[in-house]
Length: 149
Image (cartoon, rainbow, N blue to C red; front, side, top):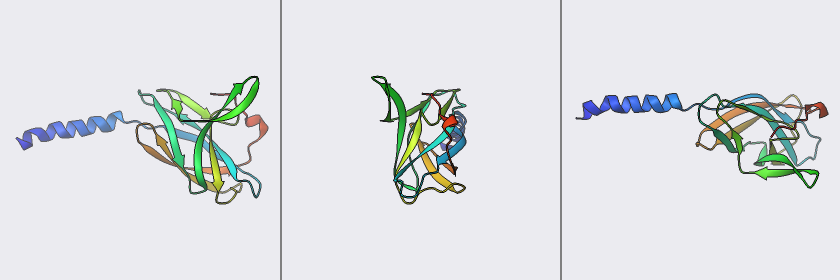
């Protein structure tokens, strides 16, 4: 009986692996900040190549004491930055994390990130999956501002 069940278990494991598609991360970068700055921001493009909607729900970085998900929203005609619980990434879509839109905020910096170095992150998705990424530190120019999200 155990031998008869083995193919079913193997097929189940293969199916779960085939269906679990992760986000891809492109153009990740961290904003360079002057000495003494307690915060910075991170930006990137998140693409969901799968058929199931996903969401970024958190993350960590050794550079920061805490990492929060944020978005800019218009409130009474004034643009305000707000913390959000998740950044949705619909199936088959790309979501841009950029200045003026969705982004990651890094608080309680161990030290200011310096242009040219890299920062590591662990991002957490709503399905429990984690992604490890490395992002270079760059100056963010005003023309990089986006209104996405």
